[in-house]
Amino acid sequence: MSSEDLPSAPNFYSPKTVFLTGGTGGLGGCLLHKLLHSLPTQKVYALVRESPATAISKWRRTMSPEITDRMLATDRLVLMVGDMTKPQFGIDDGTFAELVEKVQIVIHAAANISFKAPLQKVVADNCISSLELARLATSFKKLESYVQVSSAYANTFLPDGLVSEKIYELGDPEAELLEIQATGTTKYLKDFAWPYAYSKHLMERLLVKRYPELPLTIVRPTSIGPAIKEPFAFYGPEGSIPIDTVYSRMMWPVGGLDVYHAAQGSTSGSNILDEVPVDVVANLTLLHLMLGTRDVAQVGSLCYTPRAFDKVIADVRRSLPPSWLPKIPTAVFTTDRSKKQGQLAQFYRIATTDWTFDNGKSRALLGLEGVLSVKFEGHDVDDFTEKRIQRIFERTKPMMEAMEKKAGEKRVDRDVEGRVKAARARL
Image (cartoon, rainbow, N blue to C red):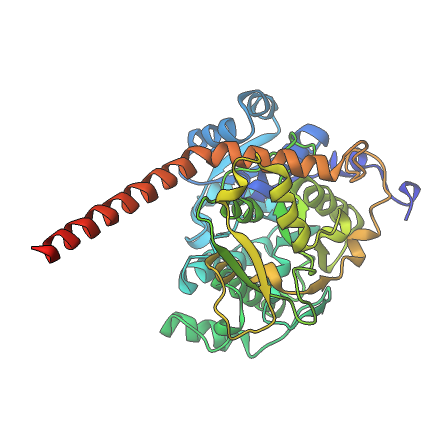
């Protein structure tokens, strides 16, 4: 597809009024920046928790005071306090009536992305809230498009292989929701990497079942990484970049072996650990809106640079100070799935799975030019990755040095205790 096949992004977005959730998160913040800084949108209603002051304070920390002031300086941003756990998101009737009359585009980017959160919590945050917003959006008189951000890892119950841009059915989603609300769990949960993944899968199925007439686009990013360029290089609020946590854990000064189950058909980490920069996801999401893409569109490393898990491990070792390397665990792979894996492998279960995510709809947009282009000239992936890992190391070094000190104190305590016991035995 060529740029000539599309209207220009400024022309498309200039008359549009957008309702955005998740604007203080990683992807939501990047989308908000694009909608206000790169595109001449008519108005953006951004749902925020607690108060506008809380949201502004977070943007100042995560996006810098200068970028925040630039966003606030426009008269096109309306900060709307709400609570996604409440009916009508806690929005008063008068304000909601304004949304009903004006909003043309809804982008629901808010989510609870914790891998540790219990099932009932993530279902309430990621499923029930999405259904409530969809219900509200059906009353928007000018609604043209509804974007629901999901996750490619909503389908972690699938075996290794191709993950297509479609909804994968399980049982009756309504019955599953009732079961979870009554018992706190479901028989399907054990097949998913985390409750978070199942909550996204359940949400997708309920959304299309309850609201078949909604002009719906489900955007499924894989693991979202730091920005290449926008709002600035390495942008990504703390806690919003899962593979940063993987890199960090690989650096811990705990020594020993870190055991991983090799992906099916492999003896090492030859599988792709799929990640895509947040600004690539934001730009492609906004391009899909322009195109009127419907159903499911996945965005992953096939729209950037696929990287094998072996390469991820090697990147850590080449990017750290040589003096630190003897302290970190050595990754080893086994084809014997009865062997116990290390803690990182147990928690980040997708690290050694071998899915290929179909990015067909998004890859068709990679050649487009303009403010939403994903062609980042001069971007060197290896150099970017090395700098990223070094930034993570410097950020976590104080914590890791404290870990070393505590471990040393425990060794001394054990040594003293052993000497005391030996002395008593000689008496």
